[in-house]
Length: 306
Image 1 (cartoon, rainbow, N blue to C red):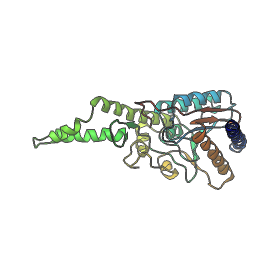
Image 2 (cartoon, rainbow, N blue to C red):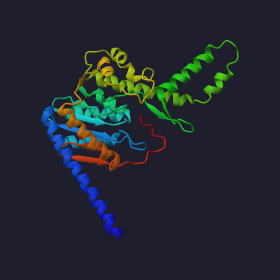
Image 3 (cartoon, rainbow, N blue to C red):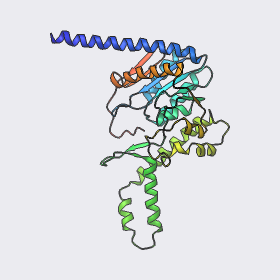
Image 4 (spheres, helix red, strand yellow):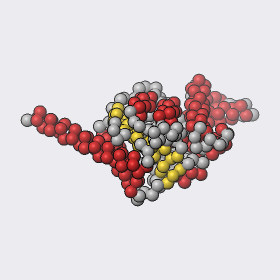
């Protein structure tokens, strides 16, 4: 009896998964028509132990796009808490190279944070609603033997620099308190953190200067997107950056009405795909014709996702 019950549960689950796929296939086909270009989705789970954007995502996206007619361009619907900067840069290049128009649109149905925001930076325009969220792109690091565990690389370097400057400038002759605090840092780690910050900035500037901010010098771009680069203004890496602020930063934002028929289709697709990556799969890349899924894997010690 137990075996029959188990098989029934598995069968019911498989039917639901197939039904969800068929529903998404119809939604993707309808969106292709409404937007006038093929639509692909790139979703990763927001679960606490879920894998983040990495090279595997770039690989499976390329595998999907190789099989898709992108003569009319590409619209990428992206939902992810972020991940690694270099794979995000790869995804930007893949989308541009495979798109028949040499550019792509990024569509944010809910949240595209951190490295996923970098992917949006590479688009010719970002389609958002009033509730869609981008986020800061400052790298996040994991420090062992700490209460919080995850820190902003920018804040760690900033704190180190402040302590070092105070120790140098102190004229009292008692710099022991500063030395005790500085002893908690390894200067090799600090240099690595500086490199991570520089890398995120460089990827962002290159993506924007070769896309929606092609007419601006690097320094001007950095000034415009400083709210994305450093957590000083948003105060938290997790804090949302909505379309108003993104537009003020010089990003090419198209705001879609929450109640429009097209946005309803986008959001219905988001609900179905998000449920899939948070229950059966850790990651999903789909078009109306093809699907690829990646199952969650445990995070390795020492990995530093954004």
